[in-house]
Length: 148
Image (cartoon, rainbow, N blue to C red; front, side, top):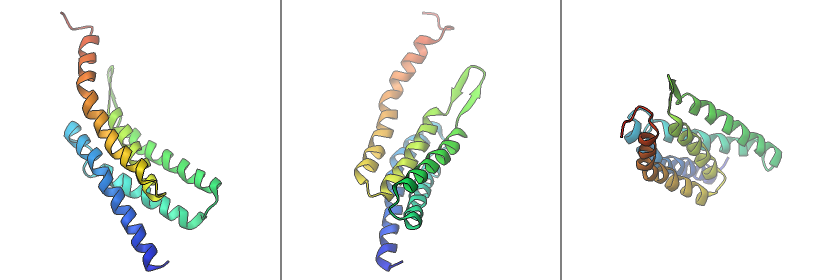
């Protein structure tokens, strides 16, 4: 491995970390549990996973499909741990989806698909922020215990 390749990998990993920060900030502000430390690490790990995979499998598209499949399974497993069910309520699905999005962001950076990574970095927290008031309104109107 050359110095140039090492620098390029380092830049990609740092970019994955930086682009995960808006999602991490939104999740930390919303949940106070997961976000600032978790989501950037997911992005960095997924970016590094794909970079290692590229080095190992080369240009084989079938192998890259397997790499991406493994990434989705792994981030899905981590995200599943964020989902909690209590009585008739389920919490953590937005965080689980953010974990998956962050993993895809890291993979996009590793594959030089920076426009996709940037779109994920912008749209994921924007969606959560913009739609939160609508979600709360719908939840209140659907509550059978609510008396108008």
